[in-house]
Image (tube, rainbow, N blue to C red; front, side, top):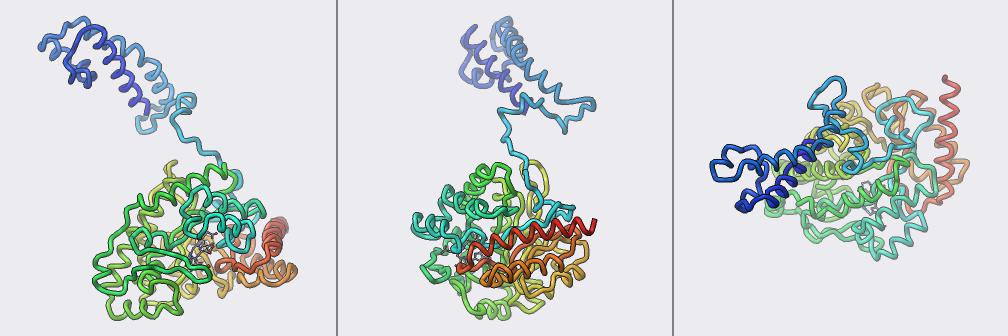
Length: 452
Ligand code: CP3
C-alpha cells in the first residue's frame, strides 16, 4: 500500500511539474513515471533537462513522508513480505474490524477452553418471534425480506436482543443459490419452497451452469451490514446448503417426502447426478468464499437430506462434495482460516468419516447420544448440538432438564457448541428459549468450576 502511495504521489507531482514548466505531449502527461525515469529519452526527444529534473526532485521530496512511513513499518528485521505502514498511516485505508468481544463460539469451534458453553439455535431468527413476523409482513414475503439487506440485518439481530446468544447467523436461505441459477424460487404462504423450473431431465441438467455471484450480491451485502451492526458483539455465521441438499430441491422442484426422484436419479443416472453435484459444489464454494470476504466469522454447510442416502451414495454425492467445498475455502481478509461446521441430518452413522472431512465441527441431530458421538470422533473435531427442537414445545422445567442432560453428555472438555438438533419450530414459546439459553450458560459455568 505504501509503495503504491509513493508512486501515486510521485505521479501527481510529476504531472503538476510537467504542466507547470513545459508543454509535454499528452501521452507523456499520462505516463509521468516514464518521464521521470527516462531522463535520457526525454532529452533525446527534446524535453529541456532542468524542468524534467525539477519534476523528479519535487515529486521525490513530497513523497518523502510516505517513504518514511514505509521504513518505520519495516521494524528491526526488514522483510519485504511483512511490510507494514505504522498505525497512524494505516487508519484511513484499512477497513477497521472491531475485535469480537464474545468469541466463545469461535474458541469452542477450535476446541479451546471457554468460560461457558456457547449457544446459538438453528433458525433462531424465525416465525416463533412476533417481531420477526412483523418485519416479514412489512417486507411482504420471505424472499423480499431475505433480499433486502437492511431488513435481513434487522431480523438477524432480533433473537440477540432477546437472548444472550453467543453467535448470530446470517438471515437468508440455502435456496438462494439455485434461485440465482435461474430456477425461480418462491415461498407460498403455508407451503414450503417451490421452484418454477426443475432439474428433472437430462437437457435441464446439461444446460445448468454455476451462477454469477453478482446475482447474490444482496446476501454478501447483508453479511457486511450485519457485521457492522454487530460491531464485534458476537461472531457471525455464514452458511450454505450442501451440494447434495441443494440438488434435492432442484430435482424435486421443492420439498418432498423422501425425495424419490433424487434417489432414483442417483441410482440410475449417476453421471447426471455427478454433473449436478459438481456445478453445485463450484457454486457453494464461490458463495461461501464471498460470504467470508464480506466478513463471515465461521461458515456452516447444511446437509439436511444427506441422511436419506445409502452409505455409498452418501460418500460419493454428499460427503465428497462437502469436502471439496471445504478445500476450496479461502482465508478471510485478515489472512486467517475461517472455522467450518458440517451438519448432515441423519448422519450419525458416518460421524467418523465426517470427522476426516476437514471441518472444524460437526453438527448433530437429536437422535445421536453426544457422549457416544464424542467417542467416535475423538479430539478431531468440535461438536454442535443436539437438543430435540420439540423439547421447546414443553415447559420451562422440562426444557432446563433436557438442556442439562445434553451438557452432561458433552462433558466439560472444550469443543462443544450448544444447539438444537434441527431448526426451531414456529410454535416455540420464546420464554422456553430464554430458559434454554440461561440454563446452558449457568450449568456449563458451574460444570467448569467443579471440574477445575
Ligand atoms: O437459522 C437461521 O436463523 C438463519 C436463517 C435460515 C433460514 N433457512 C431462514 C428461513 C437458514 C440457515 C435456513 C436454512 C435452510 N433453508 C435449510 C437447511 C436447514 C434446515 O432447516 O434443514 C433448508 C432445508 C431450507 C429450505 C427452506 N427454507 C424450507 C424447507 C423452508 C420452509 C419450511 C419452513 O421452515 O418454513 C424455508 C423457509 C425459511 N427459511 C423460513 C426461514 C425463517 C420460514 C419462511 C417464512 O418466514 O415464511
